[in-house]
Image 1 (cartoon, rainbow, N blue to C red):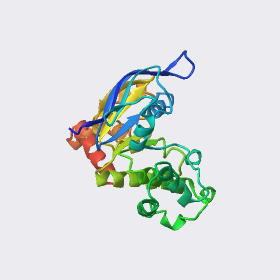
Image 2 (image 1 turned 90 degrees about the vertical axis):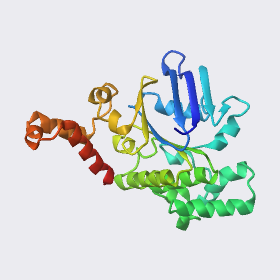
Image 3 (image 1 turned 45 degrees about the vertical axis):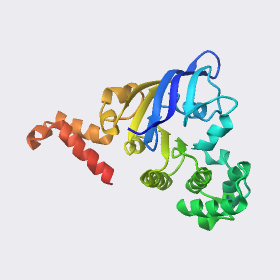
Image 4 (image 1 turned 45 degrees about the horizontal axis):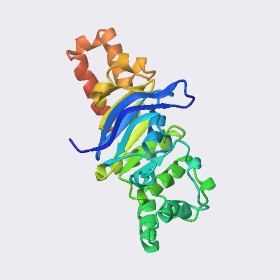
Length: 277
């Protein structure tokens, strides 16, 4: 197992000092893994992402990132290690052009100009946006804006990338583009990736899933195990994967018995087929 890069202990947070959005939450995220934090709207998963980067201050509890306990003194140091791409990329744009926007964070870190140029070209190329260098952000599609936001995070050389519902507002093609980019970043092997979502088609691709409900972690495990737990998924307000639904329908119709296969084996076969798509 890789080293722990994010450690959270007994974390609490409330927006109104009445209802807990995060409730005695403890979990760990490991270096260079792709972990999906899965939960329905209101489960606390996006609040958790904001607590990790210090946009919100917990009522109590500890957030430790890359060996540093998050506090007022080192919050900006920790943000150098964590890049985040939010659901609505319009909220992240500060530059008048794509170039200005990717450069903005590096300017704040006082990175030398020649190094900035190298990183801008490198990461805009990586997200296939180099031809939009001088484009104004409002002229871009949702998927293109997300790509620029990702390039900005990569340009800061962040060890950790958080995708906070970053595909939920995109059309199918835009969603596929971003998922493929996350898969590419994972294959490069030098980033820790956190996907925050309620999309099971995204969760299935991760190394590990953390399921949240009512501000708590209720289950952690491999996607192939978690996403076959129908009772858990329904209880957390999540859909059941089509592979599991189909196998259950076949079982109910006595077709599985006629095929002389176990339901678990059929689910695994359908699962593997889905992953190859």
